[in-house]
Image (cartoon, rainbow, N blue to C red; front, top):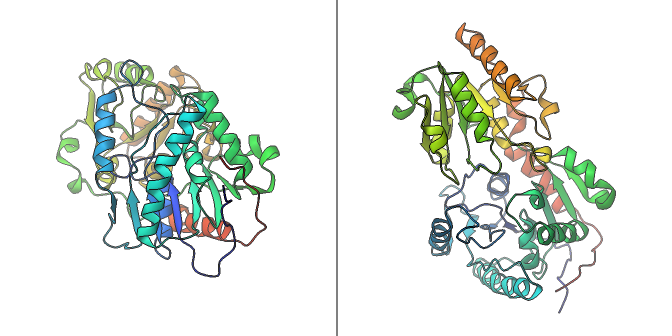
Length: 405
């Protein structure tokens, strides 16, 4: 097979991003979407929605038929421009075949998805783009596409995700790390761990925040379903995945702080009855990205409650900057980048300390104590992060050899 043409064109680059999420039904705050939205202000961008990490199956995956149905609905949207103010920003959902269990399955799945991406690029006039890969299972597709440069947006240690075929994903991660021209890390912990093998291609690109979007709203603009919930409100927004979020800790918060309302905004991957049986727990379900700041503005304290595992040890949550941009005090379990925010958030190492930190923070808020403000919020913009990505991705350099399927 012919190797990708990696010549450095003098024309303005286009970008193809293999995202880890689906634009049509996941939180649009994720770094791959935010970076590409900013890049699309000056360049043509095609976002390829997540092709998945495994095949949803009954008995192995929560809500498998719902997941399959929503993916098919996403595929049916074909190629679209979802943002009227960004005509260069395009989104597509290829029909995926997550057959990662065998070498033959991987080749067939990659061929099917690659053909769809090639067709979309032809339609949009995209030739030799910068390819950004955020999900390792997209590597089999990306490696066969002509490109100007290859960027691995190393947003997570995906091989540490529960319920995944860890060895297969780990192999894809390793191949991407070797082949990428630039590896962008949101976690310095993960970057330092892998830097010996990645070398000079490693760059730290901290997460940003949509500064204009995540600004505190006045009480009169709070959503009705939130405004009717008694204060004080301990709040969380984001996906609620029991393999990553410590639901037992959240239940302990509800039980030991009955005077507070625990407000959860986000879709859940599993049953929530263990939490919602408590009268002070208010699970509001999924809300669109546009509504999230209005809900966050009504929290008195924001929380992060990750399970202690290899994934959380390397994570740098975007929601933390969103909480801080809203001016919220934050209580969190330990995570990879927590030490960088030691002067801004309370990190509790045990459930007892977590409850204690929430009590202290609620007392401070209740006495009219001033909420912390993120003075650096303007410097955290996604536009500034995207400008750095473009500088690295389009920097002239010697081609690196790729192993082709």
